[in-house]
Image 1: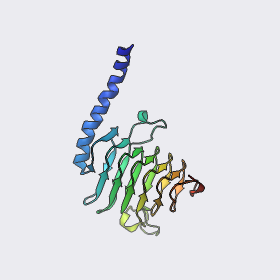
Image 2: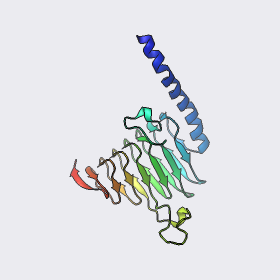
Image 3: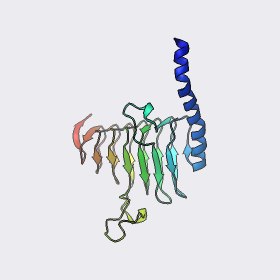
Image 4: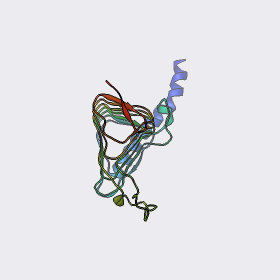
Length: 200
């Protein structure tokens, strides 16, 4: 029986080693700053513009394949800077599953944050609200403001965190929420737009 279990697990072990080795090469090639260990489940999509930064903390977990998370993910983790000088920082021991982060200025995520399946975190509107030129994607024309997510935050699946938001330490964002304003520490918010539910 033990031999059968080992045979079943063997391909997964090979995948993990492959993700680890090839993933590290990919991240170094892309110019990512990261600390060991870094846990990769599948390969994230990483796009950094010149003079922008992606800084990943120690013990970070990036899940880009559905087999490694209960809800599954609709796409790999996406980490993308949109303008020169933009910055994405993700703290130690945080976990992201199919998360999209786009930064025109900066997105900062603290330590030990749990980011649920297919969450989007963006610091920009991507397009100008003016009719003329709206169709053309020029992030420098769009309204942008930094996003800060403090330590020990739990963001439920498929939530959206929009520009200029600060999420206080230890707070919880209910699944499917759209967060358009600051969230106090140690509170639960949910809904569209997200509203206070209770204190923790």
